[in-house]
Length: 121
Image (cartoon, rainbow, N blue to C red; front, side, top):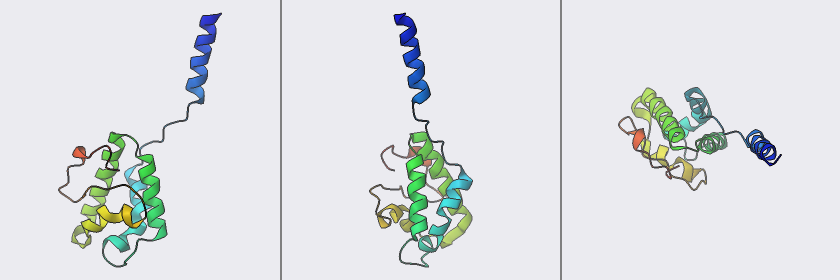
């Protein structure tokens, strides 16, 4: 009987445990950060509130180091597609401009996302 209760308890814990959010896909990352473009290419002095909301949502989903590497690679790819019109300093400073207490690494076309620090964002 005790063994049955133990097995049942473990089963209940597994079923009721909150599901881990999936790593955001590159199309999701790109869509959520699309409103940041006017800020990172120097067209506006402040990021749009929708940009900050999108960034906050992405960073909240990127929990593990692998999640962060995936998000970093998505951002890196999107920036490469934009060419030279992006201020990479504005990209890494975006969380601070949005009032967040996290740091983005200096992501540019040469940044090695596999070297990202777990605590960086």
